[in-house]
Image (tube, rainbow, N blue to C red; front, side, top):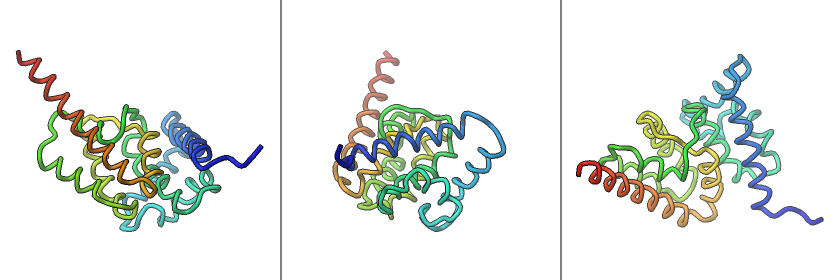
Length: 184
């Protein structure tokens, strides 16, 4: 049998990694709290999460067969996961954010500013803010979908950007229609 293609290898890595992250939230113990604390450090440092030494053993063991460039998405999701480890939303981050009941013009601007980044180097900081806002307002994050989208960002960023923006406005317009129907 031949060598697995990039997508097959990436899907397998994503599934294994999300399984690892979810296992951290399913059982409370000192080991899991310690790992979550290490992962959270990826958001507290002024460096990108893939440059935070405490994260390396937790991420690298699941991504050793991937290129350093491909691993970046895993570091980003690992650093965000402790914000809401039990969250399990549907759709992409645009849908999650757009589904919030009070997305105002300023929040839209923040989201559009985030998707303006061409690489994960710039995206990770703004994405963290968007994820925190989504969670703080009761939104849910689909961690697997977020990781899958981020692994494609460096290769097909334009498509990912449009997917997120369309999902944002679709969710926002659906919410507005539902509000109008409820008011009738």
